[in-house]
Image (cartoon, rainbow over all chains, first blue to last red; front, top):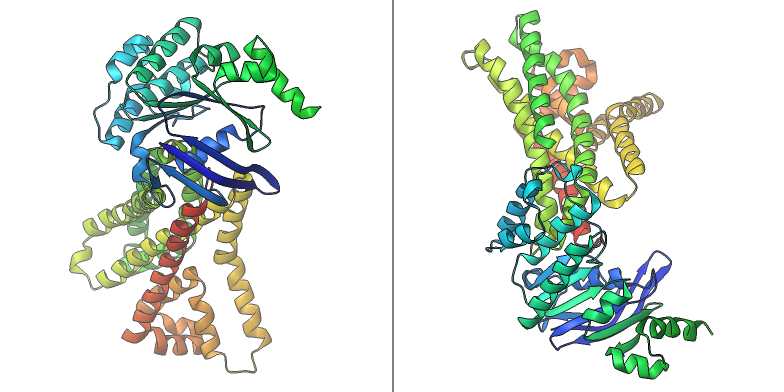
Length: 235
Length: 248
């Protein structure tokens, strides 16, 4: 579905992506991991066409994304920081995004699930961080697209919402979708991900499933295995 | 946010033109006063609204960028949203009092139409310039100051430089130079267009005669309208170009 070939990106003097090669052809849940500033979000934004790479090739569903925008109809994207126009009501923004996508969205069930009913007529600027993230999730997951990209989906969520989120992600996986996500919560990643993509200093450092990673690093605990990857590099 | 302020802007023009008409009791005098207001205020409002709108809707823009929408249509759409609502406020706000005063029975109608046309042009030009500045500057404070500087330069400083160069080179024939220099500043261009249309060019002395010869003809009018159009098109094309390459 998503093919990334030798993608470079520089912000000023800061070389963030140094030749990323990644081929995500299967369905399932892929977790992109890496220390802060390793280029996770930049990579995701490059796939979405929000960041324009200096060199390299990106294709989504076999179509090169350069100068194209129609392919974004196949992607549901959850941004890391939920920035919505603060003067809009929750219901207004949901209606607006539905209108933009020109597709029916299944927002009612999600609103119900996350308990957002009492917030529907409130302005976004009056919501708490966790509630904003719930709105963010509703906006992302209400469409039925083959690719889902989640950038830190768990941030600010309470335990119940977290449970719902896990169920939702597994549901989407069962529908045969490709799900790409980043997270710093290792237990969440271990529970959910089929495959790990570990980014380090702008390159793909490891790609494979969790078992392979554990074997390769001789660690039993997943968290340790990740830490091992990091210290190995530094040693 | 945007709609609320454009109502205020609309009410301001409504009030301004009503008061001017009431005090002057004469259409053409009111047009002259309005011209002075328009050539200074319209660019200022266009610049500030443009830059404020861009920075305020930055989050929204990022939300839209992840949706299946063409990039250029997001930015051109935002630009047109601001520029057209400002132009509407201007045209309707000035139009209503003048229409009530009996504009359509008077001879000044074409002067007034020219005033509205140049006002609209100025709005389009300066909003586009403001969007350009905002696209190139991530830093709000910097972007804001550049925008204000641009307005100050076009509205005040440019005239000063122009005048000084005229004095410095007064022993040379300056006709074509001054006409050329006027073309490079949309504010000057609009002001002179209106002044000449109002037949008060005698006030401008000898230069006025030169200008009258140039701008007073149909040819000059076409040239200046195309110069204004160019002033709109170039920045808008740059918005289109720059927005395709920008990272978010």
